[in-house]
Image (cartoon, rainbow, N blue to C red; front, side, top):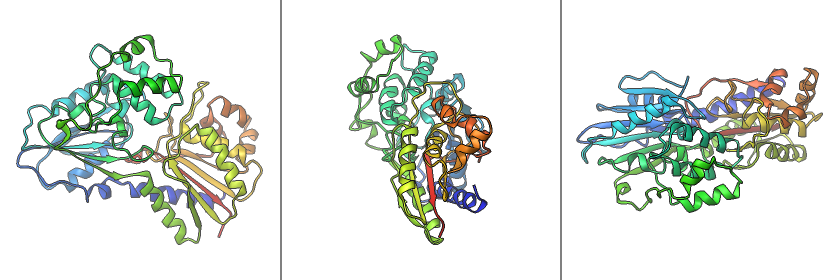
Amino acid sequence: MDTRAQNLLTSLFEAAIKAADPLEALVSHLPAPPKGRTVVIGAGKGAAQMAAALEQLWDAPLTGTVVTRYGFGAATQHIKVLEASHPVPDAAGLAATEALIAELTNLTTDDLVIALVCGGGSSLLAAPADGLTLEDEQALNQTLLASGAPIGAMNAIRKMFSRVKGGRLIANTAAPVVSLIVSDVPGDDPAQVASGPTVPCASGRKEALAAVARYNIALPPRLAAYLATAPAPPKPTDRAFLKNEVHVIASAARSLAAAADIAKAEGWLVDILGDDLEGEASTLGTEHAKLAMAAQGPRLILSGGETTVTLKHKGRGGRNTEYLLAFALGIEGTAGINALAADTDGIDGSEDNAGAFATGQTAAAILSAGLDPAAALAANDAYTAFAAADALFVTGPTGTNVNDFRAILIGWP
């Protein structure tokens, strides 16, 4: 990829991240300090950065605990930052969740809970339902991650197996709760972010069973038996939630708009396909390749959302590199198309890259390095393919998470 295109794509990604920066996002959504204590809880891949930003902005005493992914911590003074495993929960996540629950005990109506919630919280908040174990929750996450089901279906299922998801975390808290949420889900439904630990949704066992059937999810027998009689989570109309507030403070739509503004200022025509695109990552990559091939430049095509990967093999990669490898194959040999696909949290899947770059010559570069790009795609091994072509996009943790960011440049102004 030529330096000019790579620099522009990188600047668009950086603009999207800045639009979701916790410090800027929080400042206009802070509640008034309470008469009593302010207690902060939080979970997600950007929770530590949100906590650090809140400490800078909050003009009153506060305490609390948040949990984030290993390596995603930030320096804080009053809010404890714990780290745990993502995307499959571990014992540290179980202990961290118990610490969050402990923060909510002995509070009164004069106190205030500020909940900082963002993507990744579903696995970081490990709290299997009564009668289940951490091993059960790990098996559930592994099954769902390999299923190819969209995030809404996964959340409908996993909240049925948890003591904290679906609003349960704060259902018995006397203090009012203000949830400040960075959305990483299509449609920005706050009840779906991190499986809604502080925000209930209307779905229950019926919807979970329907999702299992629709996506042919083979739950382990012990979990299937539990789901058949699992108790319903609290409803949004439950009196426990009437005193609470919920604010989505950052989202993919706002980040895409920020990137579009940068490009428009440099003379690009911009098409935003949507901030809520879902579906199989490789299928979407092929579709976008056809779209790019038919488009007239100079043009920038942006999109966000959360694709899925149905794992058939144990290769390395994430949904953004899988999407982009299919895209690269679809534009093979074409000049004048440059693309970036990356996860806004800085980590695509479980590797060390945010995503990758691609052009019409990327597939040939992978082949020249001794790998078959089509075989790598079939093996769910996109990371290895892009690494061979020296086309990985590495940022490190960004401190926020508004999900997939995809940018396709066609021609040049």
